[in-house]
Length: 350
Image (tube, rainbow, N blue to C red; front, side, top):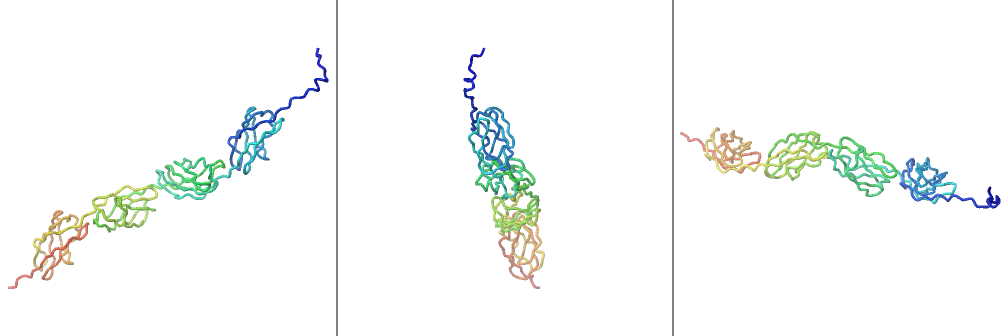
C-alpha cells in the first residue's frame, strides 16, 4: 500500500538534462567545399538533435557515444563556431576554419633528370600548411613552404611528363607539369686531339644534346659551344694539357665522357742535310720532338712529301725552289713548330 501523498509527489521537481559540452573538433580545419569528416569530442551527447557549423547544419552526423560524434562538414568560408544541440540545450562553440584550396600556376625549372634531385620552385596561392607535394603521385624528396605563394621542392626520381600537385587542409591543387629528361649521351668527338693552347673546333656527336647548358674539357669549360641539333654540338677547346674527359651537361644531367688529348707543339732542332739542290726530290731528315701527329711539312710556302719515322724524326723530300734560303717547319695536332733554315744551292755549271 502506497502511503505517499499524491499531491506531494506531484510537487517534486523533474530532473532537467544538462546542456552538452563540446571540447574539440578534429581536424579543426578543412576545405571550403566541405564534405570532409571530422570528430567532435566532449560529453553529454545523449539525444543529439543537431550539429551545426556556424549557421549551417552538418551534412550528416553519427553519435558514436555520449562523448563522441562523427560529422560531415557542410560547405563554408572563414572561421565558424561548431555546436551540438540536445534536449538539454546547445553546447558552447569550438572554432572550425574553412581553408581555400591551393592552386599552382608555375614550376621552375619545368624539367630535370630522371634520377631526381632537381630543386623546383612552385608558385601559386593558399600554399600555407601544405601537407604533401607530389610529382606524378610520388612524394617530393623534400619541400619547404616559403610563403602562401611559394614552395621549394626537390623532385624524386621519375620519367616522362608528370603532374605536380600540392595538398593542404583546403584540398589538393590542380597540376603543373614537370618533364623528366634523360642525360645527354656522347658517341664521338672529332678531332680527338688538339694543341695545348686550345682553340680547336671540336664536333661532339651523340643524343639528347638539346638544351645543353655546359661543355667541359676536364674541369675547364669550353671556350664556346653551339648546339647544332639534338645529336650534335660544336665546341671550341680551351687551353689544357694531357688527356681530359669531355662531357656535356643538360637538363637531364651530365653525359658519359669522351677523351680529348692535348698535344704539345712540335719542335725542330736540326735538318740533315741543311742544304740541297734547287730541283725537287732531295731527301731531308727533320729531327726534333712532338712529331708523331705531323700533318704537314713546308719549305717556305711549298708542301713537301714526308714520312713520320718516330716522334723525333721525319723523312721529307724537298720541293723544288729557287736558289737561297727557305724556312722549314712542320704542323701537327699540337700546332706549328719553330722554323729552321734550308739552303738551296744551284747546280755547278760546266
